[in-house]
Length: 330
Image 1 (cartoon, rainbow, N blue to C red):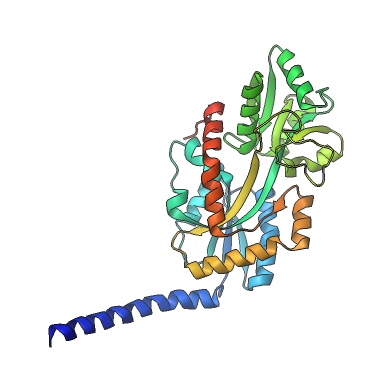
Image 2: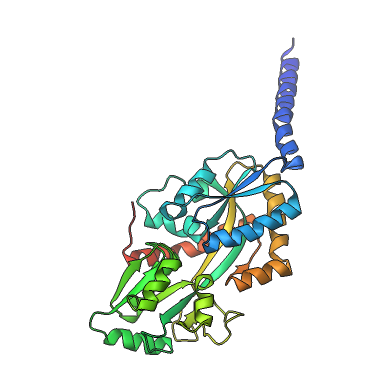
């Protein structure tokens, strides 16, 4: 056999092999989903990430067919669940509902995490954003504005206690930054979610929180808590009377919590694109936007690249907030 023929034959075998390898991926993409798709929520059932993911999960079933199963895998600030996504088969059948913590905070907060968000995960689409709201218990704190609260807090010899759903969460970092910026002596009190923070505030043990609006909407409307400001860039549609932090005199305090769907890094691009398109369509549905707004969130859809851009842009801010808070976790 001539040298020329050897090369041709080898090239043909290589091409045939590549085609054979490509076929299952294309077939998967074409018929995906052909079995149950699991969405891992890395936080407990009943929290905002769980509730909002379930709304989207229902719509994915209607748009893409198949069975969509939500699995709660909480632990280590959401790292346990997202690590499970990173290490799952990259076949489009395991998806993670990740938050800003996984993209831009946890790498500064934990001395080590088992996954690298850039190396091990592929973003699919933004899913939502939700502002935090600065709240005080009406019965125990007289302040009606941010300026009044700062003056009241600074006048207290022992300062204030502020609550959050855990060390390194956006409410913890927001509360720490707020106290440092305003020269308030603030002591952080971590709870297991807003469901535990709220009773402590109503008793007067904790005087302040900058926590997810979604968790506090009903209690603010009921009058037991007073909303002093929201951390979104504009006033929140369902709370038009509450000023933004900038309007209340706190500049550079736009702190939104956000989330995006992720898959393992090597997931075929055609599956990522199909899922991303479906998520963008779902986010634009009026019924979904309405349900999210009632829950204190804004539904979002985006390209995979948009998620990466936002994650990179926000990292310096969160790194600084982790440093200011002094938080460090194993």
